[in-house]
Length: 132
Image (cartoon, rainbow, N blue to C red):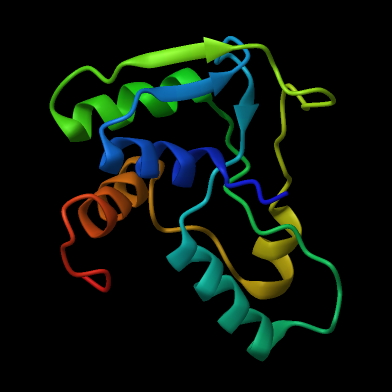
């Protein structure tokens, strides 16, 4: 069974005019990073990596409810949200330590979560240039 990440699920629900579905109360948190920063980290690994496993992250946590608030700001209006039972075995809080990426790859994320959400919303919902 395919599962989308919460942001891609929310973006797809916005595109379809559907309510956002939150599994749990929305206070669970994650360490979100924009895809362009992931690409930058992969390119840095080509030049500086040595085959080690390295967490590529922001080392910041954001709740699902905070993501919804940001998407509402970008969307320009409230988004209907439905809260359902949490998924079994869902982890409440996930945060990674990116100090190894900083040290070995000389990598730090440059996109804020809001920047990444704006770019994703523009590309996916408004069908604007993905590479801008």
